[in-house]
Image (cartoon, rainbow, N blue to C red):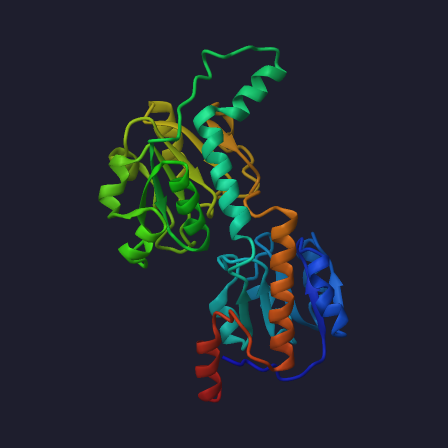
Length: 332
């Protein structure tokens, strides 16, 4: 759907880390581009008066107050897929389009997930930490093989699809739960589509790739852990809040969960989080899509989408296009 902007005045403000190589298209097209990566909220609010496009990642929360401070704003562009840090309803009410970039970093995210899978199985980060402390802990760090084990994949979007393919090639049995995917599609990738109730008790490892939503919040909690296989290992590279972190602490301390790898946290950074104190947990600072290639890919795709939007061409991935169209048709 074409969502043409009302005018061409104003700047494009980048307020989070986005690859500068990917933004060159916007400069070449003659747009005024302000790169303010890492800007504080207080300073950001002062710079919004003449901004027509705001480019963000997950760090910046775009709420109603921020939108009110940007009277010329036409577009919020999320360099990445999740838009849970953007108040889409508030943006729509002000006639502001919200755009995301659902592709470009899926390989990076899938590779990172597989890396954590190996790290959990063989306790690689713990081994490195012990050795730096002068401790030779071979017996304590006895691992498990992935070949022949059962992996549960929750969500088979762009990232989950690659994880399924790669895990199957590693001779793992791969079970998938995703209500939006058909059994034939999963089978073609080397997996088996199962229900939630069938997946939990069978898996040696579970990796989470669901989209953030109110429905997915707290998806993995005390009840889910009770139905899982003893000594299961959990990976979360999707979004914080999908796992009830306090429930995970309890499950690890009870021995139900043998290990976890957490890259996405309920609060970031997770200061004071008890999971940071558990030896069984591999902790990373939301690195899932942080590769040079992924950041360039996402920035280039987002730059093209912004250029299309501002030039009045067909703009991809405007997630509130239908609502904006209805609002304009109603003369609001």
